[in-house]
Amino acid sequence: MSDLELALLGWPEDRPTLRLDYRRFSYAGKFVMSSTGKAVAHDPTAETGDDDEFDDHVVAAVAFNEDRTDPDTLWLRYVTVREDHRGEGLGPGLVRFTNGRARERGYDRVRIAVNNPYSYEALYRAGFGFTGEETGIAELVLERPGDRSPARYRDGLDVFAAREDLSDDERSFVAEKRERGPPSMPGGGESAGGRPPDGADRDRQD
Image (cartoon, rainbow, N blue to C red; front, side, top):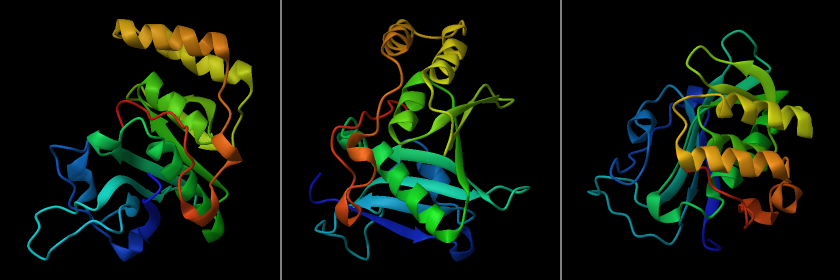
């Protein structure tokens, strides 16, 4: 992880694309599209050639675009981590990095919608808070800056707990996190040099 670097590939108007290996990344096909901006965690020492089918130096990626009705808000659309790097904190670290670049560009807030408790926890570790809103496709909306109070954190977990399709593992996870309360951000934010801080949990879906 110490060899990885974070980088902004471009904003939506730059039309950046990524060729992620669909066998190793969730949502790989979403990153081929040029309609979203993208940021990555990558290994600058990885060997790549002109004939490579995939961008194998990339180990995590996030896609984002501006809210259609609110120019002060940026939406994170997809976050994915390569299967051999899950559990290392890359997801929350990359999201924190992207949030920082969004603030520098003038966005007041960054939002994301999640559909499982693992992603919910990971976004809390990235500094987000539950808005109390849900989308029409059973996703909870989180934002940064946002309400990170214990009561609001548990409100989101209660939404997941009430779902009939929750697995036993997810139900145990929700009960454990609800008892503990909201997590703190490792190191209080990004570490020096744009590297993701160690110790952050990774959401299991990406």
